[in-house]
Length: 302
Length: 235
Image (cartoon, rainbow over all chains, first blue to last red; front, side):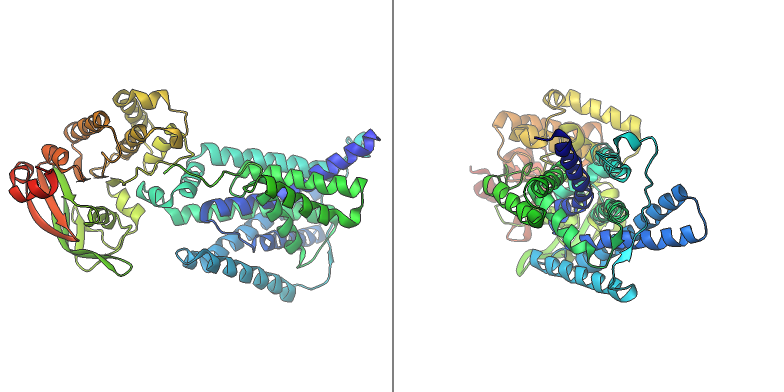
């Protein structure tokens, strides 16, 4: 067995998994707090990529240096995606909070279609080239045949985002309030927590990580279109379910497992069938662990 | 302190509270007794804005609260330990207490209250890093009351604090309730099925039947009342 090839596939899978993880976090956090599969989450990621493209094109045109372009474009994408995520919750989900869960789910699908078509009309249906924002670093040259600089940046960014998010959720007041709200909304309110605000923050945090994912992958793949959120959204959703929906470490683990599954099957068997293998693997895991790898079983002490 | 005037409340089509009026004065322990399904818990939930009140008015220290959001009502100084305790099962004991202090920002006072709680309930100190859901029923009740103490309430609503507890633990809990009332000057509104225990520590009591208040008197008089004895004290 060729070890170097194995490592390439391993790191390729890690890169893919990192992107899936950034998107899967939004699914799992929103599900954790309001038990809704937010089908429009992939669109938030797509909007992040589009904003990144528009802002970086404009800034490059006026002759800004690359690092400044990257940072400003990323910030703009995050702010823009967050405001979409926030507004989406207020318009499409909040009025349905007491309605049957299916209503909110249908509202989410509607939101997804609306945002796709909105970008289709406002922008274009064509694939747009996305500039490679992450340059090839000179110091990384000797290792570039194993993993390229952009891939390295993707993995490192994901690691940093995960660390920040873990800190936020575990140790800050709002993070604890998010966990409390997800476990018992009525009790959270009875302790003075503004549940609506906590839910808004959850949507904003999830949208921010999706926007970061959107920019990273667009810059890595080199082209975007209005439909890109759909398949990425489905994959990230699979990752979140695989890991155990509602669990944040689960989403990351599920995303990495999915990334590696795709990468190894594509590398050793056939790249034509990588999606088939990914979903086959999902089915297998769910047969043996219905609530996902790190999911909590439904039994609860009353 | 708390005035309830002619309140009605509904669960779907069920008329759960019918024209309820009550008064709670500062520093008192008041208990509300009645059979299962009489509307006792609904009364507490209506005060906290979880169940909407229809008609009438609820005022807390002069502020009308019957149309306010729950978290705003809590911010005024009302706290509830709901029936079934509602411990956050996946938060640790410490984190559960932190959530009690959510509206506070006085780090020193929070620390003091936490130390006070750990001397009150050494068991909680031992288990401070354990998830709330892994505690026994009695420990969870201690945690629920401690979490309420952390909010520094001026009015504390307690729903069935003795439910499912061993008699010795129940006695301990009631000692603590009296202590909170005396030491912290916290007004206490107690809902209990164990009418005997509740009325013994109460200044006054209300008796509730199928959504209406049928009787009110001092705790001592209610304990001596023949109807109350027959219906709720099992004598």
